[in-house]
Length: 318
Image (tube, rainbow, N blue to C red; front, side, top):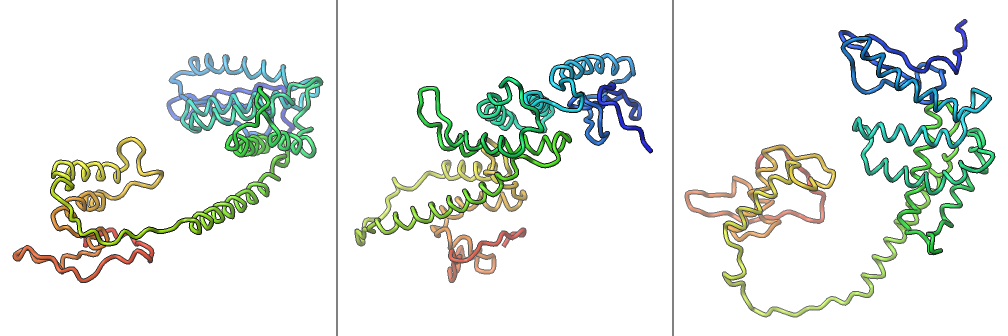
């Protein structure tokens, strides 16, 4: 039978991995399940170099453990767990695991809604969080106000529970708790999404009922050359589309993966094709090489894209 590890043992170890040395450690400073250990970023060529860095890390972990673990040695205060979680978020930013904006948002929410409770005397323990305390924290978010007494912005209040959920999952992952104390927020999140969809549909219906379409009739006023962009502008637009569809430039494609080079090049040539032929968007998307007569400089237009159906992205050139 394996011996139960001493929670106050050495939380840092230097291990050899191939030709280099790595550092593994317990993030809480308390020795427990080896599966909870983390690998410190970086590697060292000699054990002396690795041990020098491990000594600094060991000092911080032991200091943290002595401050927050209390006299029971197996229990962490809520404030200690909060500081440990925020510290791990900040380290993950440097290694690229967590975006800076995510870390900043979660740190701000936890500081506003969790830290005041964690700093109360006597300091509550992590084991006190499940149940009534967690629900009181969430209810306090809905009633939170600024220093001048005004209500906080809706987006700040609505996003705060996601930060508490992330902290609750972290507590479970690090074996501080057996269950997530903020798991009940999942039900609230689903309900809020349903309410948001219903409200959006209601506003859309009301707006559609209030709008009165205006028909000016045919003014028979044509488009002059002064209304047509010059070729350099059309070419610049095509270049911008090409770069955007490849995922280059600021903003990318709004989170969508880049298109293949050939597909992006085809999309970029569409403005020039529209300018040269005078075809409309849905007509150009339905053009096929079988309907183009280069020797006659003619294009047969007998169909157009049906906008009422789903568009299907093809990987070959028509």
